[in-house]
Image (cartoon, rainbow, N blue to C red; front, side):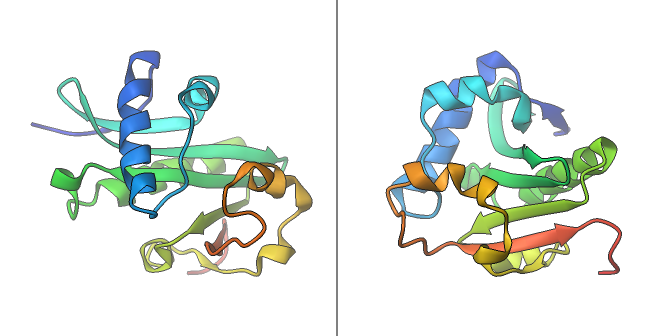
Length: 156
């Protein structure tokens, strides 16, 4: 069955919630409340297998020239098939379409993002605007995620 990247729809939210929070339960990702996912559904891309959402990722706009790739999650039984890579590429393509040149992420899996052209950045180099979500995080102020950035137009 062909799997392609698509924009998420409202009926996908419960499955996106489960994917993200399964990773959060293992300490590999920050949890996202169901209400937030409904509010931010337009940020999300998904890959479906029939009616099942098997992977998701979001591009969240932070400022005129800054966006975040977040909530990249792939179902355990669909890992190592390039689904996460395809979702991040869709996020980067949408950022380019919108004219956003700097795309960052906070992650526990930096090597995955580095293979896609992201590079290390000190969290303190990011504008304060990106810290809005951090204040609600259970790990604040002792964040142990790694910050990376993708700068569109730079040679990789």
